[in-house]
Amino acid sequence: MNWQTLLCIAVIILWGLWAFLFKLGSDEIGLKNALFYAYLVGVFISLGIVFYTFPNKFEFSKGIIFIIFATLLGFAGTILWYFALEKYKASIVTSFTALYPVITVLLSILILKEKISLQNAVGILLALIAGVLLSM
Image (cartoon, rainbow, N blue to C red):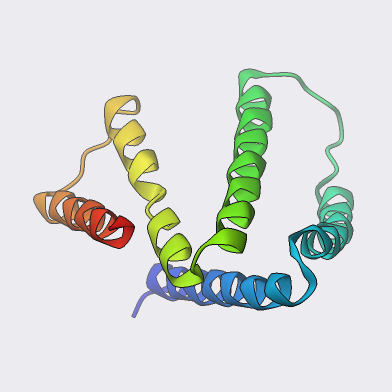
């Protein structure tokens, strides 16, 4: 097994545990309190990352604009995910929303002109079918 596969498996396990534990915690203390504690911890982690990666000079470029929008969209999606998780089954919400890479793949094909294999295309199609079945 190569490093790419191992890293991806690690991410899947960490994100799976994160969603499961958040569901347990938010069911116990409520969404508002869960968000408070989650983002309080996030502030400290973020500060550590900011101090570690602090640039020698500030720049302004198209890349920075992309990062700012990506972060705003990511937070918006996460907040909507929290609300969905509060109201609905974690097994359905997490599985269905885990299809978000399909958007990345489609945009990468259309805008970045990336190529995918037939096997990858079939996998994406099956993932979309799974999403439809989950939503029923």
